[in-house]
Image (cartoon, rainbow, N blue to C red):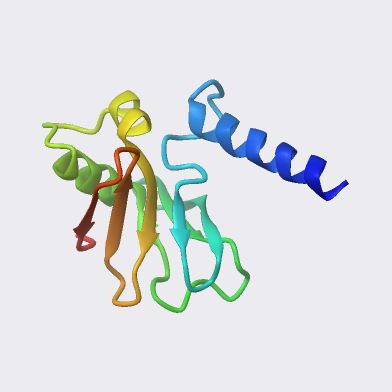
Length: 122
């Protein structure tokens, strides 16, 4: 039974990351805190200028390293890391395996080819 649940979880993770659903973004299931062992989820907050998307730890008490990351900041950092003039979801999905939150609050982008590159939240 545990093996079946593991396969289902793996399938859902791949589905979330694939881009086949408009409900999930390129960052879904990719932002991870190794300390908390939790992935981050997308949250929308109403502001005077409209809605703002943030990514926050799934744990109720939130990650101790970072409260939340603005999606616009993530897109900007990802574009810089990938040497693109603007964020491209397709390129991101193809190259970035995971984004890890570091203890100092910085991000570590891990690529499918085994490389990794750090970034400071803007």
